[in-house]
Length: 195
Image (cartoon, rainbow, N blue to C red):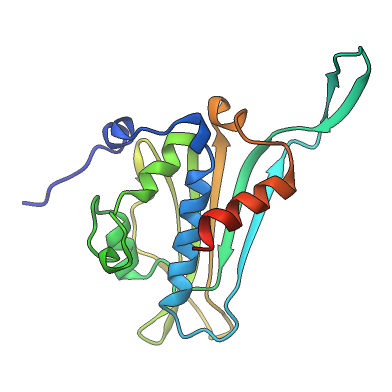
């Protein structure tokens, strides 16, 4: 009999301080790096988009003057052209404490970290398996994976590997702990992921 995992219960067990608010993003970037390590793609690429509400916020300084500053980051999108959510990777995604990437130092629980700081993660992955192209799209929330169905086979052969992971609904206590600066964000990603 196969054991199931209560996603909300698993996420509730994870401790994530506000000073680690960007760790879910770091986890996503590291997953992309590992996906590219496992693929034969020659032109390996990761794109990170940091999206914020387009409204500008006003800050009142100590001297009473007003300064415009951008609003907080609300959503991150990480796109790569690695091997994607093929059957083996999707099966591993659905299994808590998966052993698939244990040799890379992975514990198999990183995706639960996403839901500690974000309300929802949306995944779209085009990948090739057994000579055919597929599209797998699903959302991951505290309720689990939805929909839990087989991927859609794509017609033709004019595709390339492309996986997009969208971390959306940045929970306020974590969102507000992250600097407004795009430069600071980029520096933190590099400092965490470069080693």
